Image 1: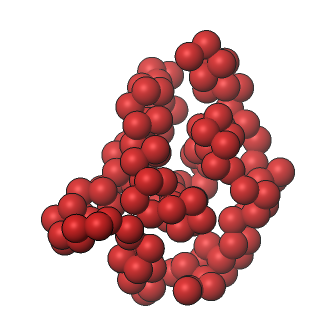
Image 2: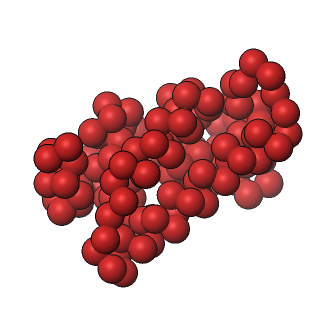
Amino acid sequence: MIDNLTEDNFIMYAMKAYNSPHYVMSEFEGDFKRTKYLKRLFRRYKITKSLKERLILNHLILLYNVFGAEPATRILFFRIDEEDYGVLKTFLIYLNYMPEKVKGINGRDIISSDILLDMDVADILRNL
């Protein structure tokens, strides 16, 4: 498909990966906005330490259902700020979606072992 995600080809990659039996542009846009919601929820967690873990899990599961495993992971790592990778990784490990390597994000590969888990999030997820 596309080996390296950049601002120029990101939307095209997401559209090609979108898997909905009755594709409607408004549905794609709604599903795609979930990355923005996740980014906002992660930011709120960093500032207030208030985590809406079930809402985050719902958004992640829906994204993986409509985009597929590898594209959803690449989309998330492209859209989420690098400082929030630890929170994202913790949720993806909980859902068993975190790969060893995320290929081609702005010219580089992201190695899972280089990202630290957020232990506060891990403790919350353990209690679900």
